[in-house]
Length: 634
Image (tube, rainbow, N blue to C red; front, side):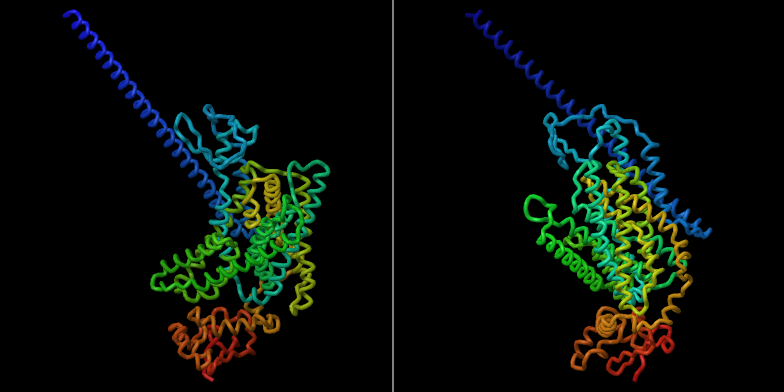
């Protein structure tokens, strides 16, 4: 009995001991696993932090490259202006510097590759933008950075560096493009613009559409020929050709206009070129969007269908008119009541102007059209409400932003010639594009000039037409539209060809501007004010704009600004209470001295008097005080 009890006790003790051993082993294993997990997590944090630091340093170096490019461009511009060297403008110079830096980045700098832990095969049929991968119970997120050629798999680090200096296309549309377009509208010389308004609208609207279809048809014939001889490696439809025609129809003669301004070329030629380039950028953006939206019924989306074409045309009108209305509305209702704090006033004006572009894009309209007409409207109305300090600051601010953004884009153009990794250079397509661009520009200028001269008193002379034909440069807008989508074979070929077209027009046509002016015997050194005083703008200006001028001066200016006659003088006596409510107190203060910088937009003849009740306004500059118009009691 005692022996049995002893055996049972020993067995229980042994079992307890084994249980303790098993529990200890389990605890040790858990502790080891936890320790291992903590070590792995710590290692992951160290690696991630190191990668983030390396990425930050690389981004800083990339931005430093662009800053150095702009700095070098500005210093060389100063040297050129000091030496009066006009053959090469700063935009062409920025492109050359960009090309040189692109060559160095592409072929001169190689980062040691490290792909020892890379997985080179993954059974996925599509290329999603984001991948969630389960690795031993942990989920990791990977994002798509772009396609890499099969023969460049070993150069992953080099590709990463080139991708770093390749900006997101939205950066151009949302950050760099708005100040350029806004400055074009805000600095518009409205007197000469309105005097040639009919011709400018014809070149910008009708001419851009003609150029688009001429280039599109010629390029479609070129594509068909390429397909016959076996030089086409992917799909290229007629809608793609029309899209190419739309984007290369956007002219940007910044180089020519800068030389025109420096040499003081004839004001009408300057106004025609500047007005056309400002408006046809907006037309090209809306036209390209309408072509992309062309969608017939059925499976084949590239066949011709009347209803689809009418829908695209309706979209063109709807988007353009909606963008125009939005831009004008935001420009009109940009009231700034912060005159006592010019810095805050300038900041508010700047933010309201930029938000116009983003608001239009968010609403499905075109920000380029909206911000352009917002700039024109603000220059006409809001500018008069700003304090003197804010007036100077806004002009200088947008002039500076325009200069930096434009030179940055041209530098980047040169850079992308070598850093963009999906170029498609086809000699036949490139030659066809140059011929099509030349013929499309000719179809725009010469026939429309002939038709316009039938109704113009001040004819567009043949030498002006040749100069406008020569000055049809392509620039920032063409580049921004082409780089926005480079996903397909057709878009990649269009982007590569567009780069070459921009390079050629800026370097050759822009550089030869002075020689072309001499060849065409176009006068330079023209004082715009004296030249304007010798012209009879009463007969040259359209009757529609003379009516608009009266309405604007009598009613809109007094309501929206502190300029113009008080509404109590222009509205009927029965509207006296309403007129007193809507008239700004400053308007009564300015009653003896009208502050109207735009009074010479259309009426500058001296033989036209505007009468508002008992007040007569004389437009004779010889009888007026330094402000162009004075008030006299009749």
